[in-house]
Amino acid sequence: MMSESSAARQQILETASRLFYQKGTQNVGINEVIAESGVAKRTLYRHFPSKDDLILEVMQHRASQWLTWFEEAVSSKGGTAKERLLATFDVLQNWYANPDFRGCPFINVVLEIADATHPAHQVSIQLRESIRTYIMQLASEAGVKDPVSFSQQYLLLIGGASLMATIEANPTGAQYAKQTLSVLMDAG
Image (cartoon, rainbow, N blue to C red):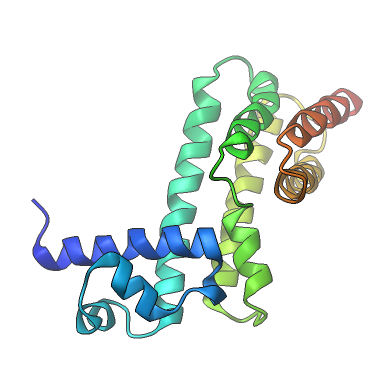
């Protein structure tokens, strides 16, 4: 059973995560997080001394959850490494098609917070590196000649598909990316 303090902390994180994703980190104030989470101001500040601390914790938690979800969803597709690589864009298309999709939260936070030294930027960079490493491993298993370059090309495709899903509210960019990925795999 979770302690009262842990439950309050979790409630703050869940509320802030939802609000930051819906409205953007810069458009949500601490008072709104307090009001929506139903905790006292003192409780929030005991767990998170500043808004930046809260943003960082939310982004770290989201990154961990997202990567686990992504890898498990791809694994559940089964098949060869090549089939799983292609399936990554089916997984992403399902994410993009969710009516609550408001863009990639890790790209969003980098765009919202201009300070490149902000710790939330590092979370986004680390997640990107984790995705690249995962794709590089699958590419190596699939027999792709240059898995390092391939993984970088993959990140360009995921960025474009995410952008199309965000700007145009059109999840089919994932299928265009999947077609391009197939060509890249066959070429090298």
